[in-house]
Image 1: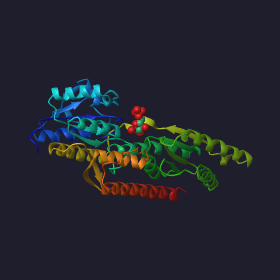
Image 2: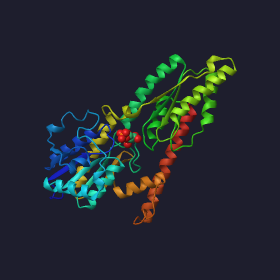
Image 3: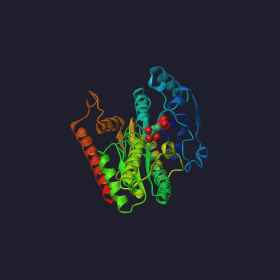
Image 4: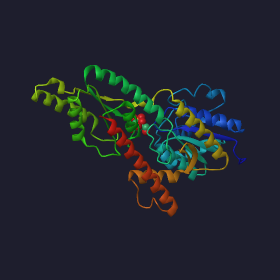
Length: 366
Ligand code: F6P
């Protein structure tokens, strides 16, 4: 263990995610067990700028493992992106003699961690976001709980759809990633999932709904990821209007698949974390402390095939951009051929899993 670490900071930033508290608890208890003090920084990077923090004792993190949200609060702090904000943040860290920081959040949080690291403050990132959109890790903290919450809510919607022979189009969060929508569509027995990763054939869905209604199917669930623009509400209206017109044309009211729209929105971000999220957060939190105290910086803790591993934040960010097709000139500079090949392999595998999972959902949605 590098001896220079006497005090570290921990923060949660960006959209909150269930399990962030479990990660803070793990960071705190692991650091204390290694003789290192911990400061909890309030409101993400904002707390560094405003000098808003609290010493975290073992008791301070008691009973937090079960709580949703983040007791350290969160913020998307624009001031931190400016040099003046960064200067204030570093002054605060120096004043409190904080030797390194664990930053829990998504890609925006990691950008902040990298900036701090570039200014000489060692940082380790932990992926905490419901979206599961950090390509370097199989799972992010909060993803499992978010899916469980979608499942519970859609099961309720299905009950009422069945009673009234209706369809419900449900929009779920995920930013640009369809992970929540696709997995919950399978688990909820949805008739389709509309996600950014797979081309959506809207006419085919309409035909399928009519075919299944003629076959006697009463309820229909369609899950749409918020990342697919101009879709969910419009699709609900289209299913409703076209099946209603068909019923009128054929003089058969049962062909009308009355369709309601529901946006689960921030409901999906709240609630007590699942067992999987608590375990993941705990393992990642302890590993983050070990990496920091071993003198490492600018890393993100990932889960790969059930193992906790580390990846350079820069690698993780470029990988995300390569996956989303948002690379800019020069971003690949400095990476070796092996690293670029590794990125391409990870992306190919992720795309394959998406296609296979979508095919599985589509085959059974009948
Ligand atoms: O990144 C998490 C997330 O919940 C996304 O799924 C969603 O698009 C976004 O944050 C919502 O952000 P806000 O809380 O600022 O409305």
